[in-house]
Every structure is written in structure tokens, then in C-alpha cells.
Length: 252
Image (cartoon, rainbow, N blue to C red; front, side, top):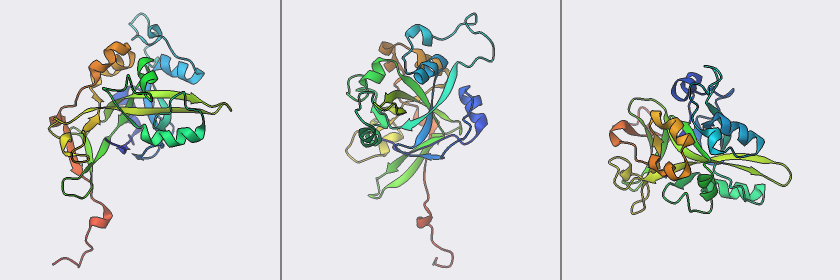
């Protein structure tokens, strides 16, 4: 289960791959729990999120040609947020800080029933998390070897996620998100990673053509998008650390 991923570091990629305007500042390349990242939602959802309300199904339904006011009107919006979900019922900011690192991933098969993620799932608070790659530990040698997993074609990935808006008694607001994962026990590539004997999982990577459908699907249809991404479309490479390099002159 990944707790480290790589963000997009080129502004044009946001426009070309996700049809959203890039952020003013791209932020850190390597993202860890509780760090500021980004997620993508339908434009109507972004407006409601900023106002502290929840859009209804009609507001988030895909626009038809006659519904669209102009060719330049965005249908998706990039939202800055913390990676690590903060449920709306958390009582304090200090409690939020403790919970968030444990809530960076949500298993798709239990998201609709688990206490931390249930409300976000049932309320249709779905998002897309853009990333260049995610990282898993290869423990087959007995030593953790960080491994970068990306698409074979080098294109970015849009991972299914859930978002939440928390507001404290003093008015402090935390916008947060988590990644949705699917079981990878039988995945030809991802079954190799993670703790031996434990359940294997992988981010729920969406097909490009399904982005809007995922954002606007009704809750009872959302689990249809929770599928493994084909192993032949992914590439896993061990990450070489500086400490692993042998200084010149010390070889044989």
C-alpha cells in the first residue's frame, strides 16, 4: 500500500492529460502523508467545496453541448489539499494531524462501510489524483528496496480518490483526500510488493476516458470503476539511493 507518490512537474501535463489549469506553484515532487498535494473534481463540486456545501447529483451530472455556456468553460478543477483524509466528524485539528497519516489510502471494497471513509463515499465525494508514479517497497530480498511504478508510455496516471472538508470550531478549514486502492493479490506485477503474507493492493488507476464518468457516477455505480490496471501497461524500476553507490576507486 503506497504512502509515497510523485506529483506532476510540468504545467502543460495538467492541461493535456486532465484538462485542468495547472497550479500557480507545482509543489514538491515527492509527496508523503500530510503533505500538500492536489486533486481534481467536477467544476460544480469545486464551487460547493469552497462554499462548504455539497452539490447534488444534478449539479455534478456531465454537461451536454447545450448546457455548456462556452467552449472555454472548465468542467474539471484542480484543488489544493492535504494528502491524508480528515473526516468531517474529527473534533480537533490536533486529532486531524494524528489521523491523516493513517488515512492516505482507502480499500475500495470497504470504503462504503468503514467509519473513516463511509460518508465521503456515500456522499459522492470522489476525485482524481494526478500523479507521475507511485512507490512500493520490494521486500523479496529481505531488504526494503523502494520501487517506482509508472505507466510504460510515460504518461501521467489519474488515480481514483475521495475528498473531505473539515471545519473546526474556530473556523479553520482542512481540505483533504485519500487514494482508493484495489486488491492486487493476483496482479501480475504488483503482487510482488509489500509485506510478505499480507494483502497486496494497488492504487485504483482510472482509464483516461472514464475521468468524468467517475466524478459524476452515482454512489451505487462507483465501485464499477474499481479495477486493477493491466500489468503490461505498468513499469516498475528499483530506485537507486546515493548510499548504494560505491565511490570510484574502491571497485575490484
